[in-house]
Image (cartoon, rainbow, N blue to C red):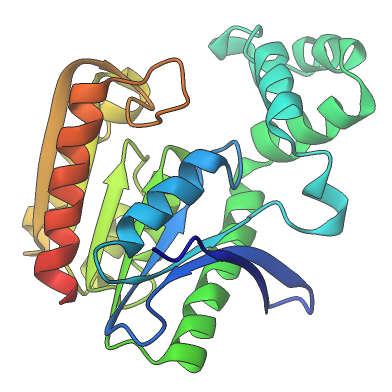
Length: 263
């Protein structure tokens, strides 16, 4: 099977986005795979290869590929920055003194990650949505697929949900991702959504009832599976929360979903 290649495509601000491209370039269906908070990891590349093995062309953009972020936003720096930031109790994460105390302990790279990824997530994700939209346009222009799917994990799961309210995706898969800022945007969705959630993931799961009610409100299709006794990121084969049974079942559901709606 095609092992994939790294390519670059132009984005909205005149820079380029690095991305992993794999699969049949003359396929009728294309899928965008959206990274977790950790970046374009081996897990995301392997998942992309797996989707490609179903007969699709797959693009996985590296959303930290700009020059000012490519080295700083490493898995190691992100993990340490998150550890520092989440030492602040949730109710004090808007408190200036609490944030300053953490920033004093962080090195310059960690301060950059905390500023952009924890404190400025809204602006960063809006830029990511634009970069993903340009990836969609790249696939559309270069390969002319008839149908488009999108799948994302954690942060990428939320981005997958959001971008499907802005672009006409034929199938959307969300692995434990947050709802869009405005759920009424669900009215704009073209295709159905499959949501795959961990049973022990309160911050994400508290949004599920509102999401379901909004899909009902706008008469849109949603399918859900919640995996009891699993934690956030259960599908990541390289992560501490990996659950083999849940991960494989989620893959079967996602692959069948794409097969049904993209072929």
